[in-house]
Length: 180
Ligand SMILES: *[C@@H]1O[C@H](CO)[C@@H](O)[C@H](O)[C@H]1NC(C)=O
Ligand SMILES: *[C@@H]1O[C@H](CO)[C@@H](O)[C@H](O)[C@H]1NC(C)=O
Ligand SMILES: *[C@@H]1O[C@H](CO)[C@@H](O)[C@H](O)[C@H]1NC(C)=O
Image 1 (tube, rainbow, N blue to C red):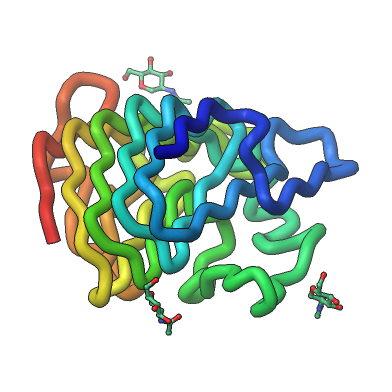
Image 2: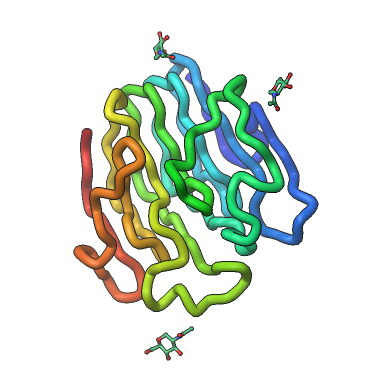
């Protein structure tokens, strides 16, 4: 069993020179039982070939500068690390799950507050289109997923399937449970 409390877990950590709250990436793989207490603010999480993983109360924020420059700038995608495709998006994934099984996300707050440091997108939930992607080969259960500023709360294979407009809950939108 492995218990991980971010930050400090990163197999790959990159720090941006841009003035921005995020440019760190946490990549998780492997087949041990892993328990993550929070992907802390400003981290994005990528699960690749991971099994038996519990993620509790994770929280992320999309980099405030995006989409100017558009993701993945100032970095580039590298298949060595299984970097996920952005599926045409210009902002980062908060959580990407690829080829992973028995994953539980128990509480997630995935927030996109800005576009190029401006918040005019927030009220219309249009700061970015997608935020959480699961590939069709993964098995996952997600409970209490709250999003802000995004059009689709959840995507499968890069296609948004849960519009935030269906789940407004005050300022945020909340999905109670989703399994795949
Ligand atoms: C998917 O994950 C399984 C289990 O970790 C692994 O054996 C397999 O090689 C992975 N497939 C790909 C295409 O990476
Ligand atoms: C990808 O990462 C590997 C290992 O760090 C490195 O050798 C390679 O140059 C990188 N490729 C690109 C396109 O950045
Ligand atoms: C968002 O909507 C609220 C309530 O209608 C309004 O007071 C606020 O000014 C709006 N914010 C922006 C950035 O448009």
